[in-house]
Length: 216
Length: 227
Image (cartoon, rainbow over all chains, first blue to last red; front, side, top):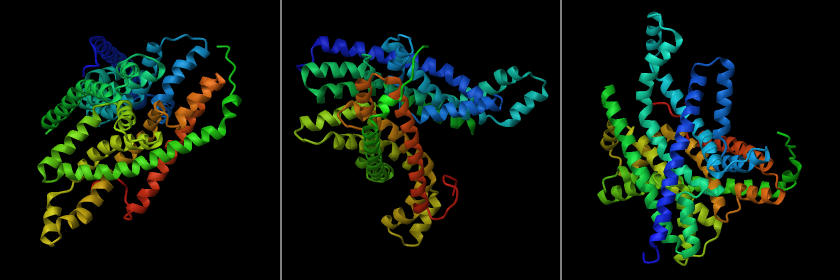
């Protein structure tokens, strides 16, 4: 790999750091929104359940590559000037919230009904029931699929390259434009993504297994 | 918020948009078909007795599932060209999508195969079925029927993910949208129209997959229920 100079490697490293940063932002934003989505669809009044299910259907039926330019080009024409990072973080958060919300709703609903009934018999208030009885159990169920979904988040940040945000994939494209060795450079980029995602996949699988054992 | 929406400018490009939607559908349907075949093959290899084949398909699945589709598309698109294979953007995009969705299909189908009770295999052996007959009549049909809902969601996701091919020169719906918005400067309207298009197409994909299920699984019970 004689044509990959130290400057190229540093540039890739920088891109890798931005990929990690963007993933964390998307996970934080998407997690927060997704939590509201999950609560709104399992506990809210009828109209909020309906609104949430329409929201999930809309977001899950649209590609991320349409949401990203919609945020990046759309917000400025509504009078809000956004940087690529803000637009990418916003679009990714919305995208992630629809999927995480759906996953977490399933987890909340898979906590046995009797638990909620028992808590009600103990005269716990609604927020006490949710906070002390349902959520601790739901979090345990939700951990493996959430870690698994983090792999999807890391992979999806690569699409932020389409709106000019320089993360790992975009850094690879830029280097390729100067070295014309696409095969090598994208293999390196793929290897870096693999190094980020594979540990998460393994962790998710291991958590799932240990959870199943604990459940038996 | 004093923005006046004007959908007429991007809508004037409707033949291009329709063409792009058609390309997206063609891309998705062919990738679904070949990806399904590849996925079933890899699932069989992965659960089979040939050691090296199982390891190879396991490696393939892990590598594909842990790298972004965008990078895979670039590797196929530029990689084929630098190996001296001159293929069109559409073919390269199809190959990349097939390779990608094959890995996901294989994981799903493997779960289905592993859910077949051992006793069924033993019964098939007792009846003197060959290994191929066992696969063809005892293992695969119920396995695939059982995981069919997961498979169809995966293929709808594939249709949405095919938008990534716009990053090469494949002229599918998102690529057309990028061109239309840079022609008309009506980005919000263009992407809203395209988002609606994708929503419609995901309904269409679901309908198509449902129709396939109606033909392929004649027993007409609820799909995905335990056997």
